[in-house]
Length: 154
Image (spheres, rainbow, N blue to C red):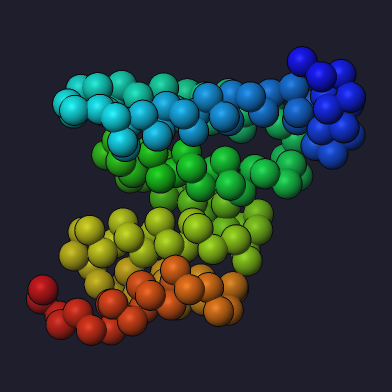
């Protein structure tokens, strides 16, 4: 409610973006509730669905060149994967990579997704693509090391 802060952040993000950004925060809150505070699959899925809707709201309204769009798409993609909507989740993660190739989290999410499927070659490929785009990223280096130590068929 501080007019000076509102003016400051509006100038940083742009009026057409800043006004919608609180929905991103609401989506993060729902995702965190789903991951850390729910005890049933039904509650978890409800919170994840709410998170996706909040991210949808922002994606539908911000400028296509909004600096935070790759991060918002990454979060939406991760939650879609958690909900079992892999086709759309993968699309969002790839779009995030297209918009900002050196943003490593979508590579990590894709690597984790393929690892969970047992497709270690694809998991390693995504982690390595991420390292090519964002060299030295420790989270991706850890994934490659772990995947290299995983025997095929495990």
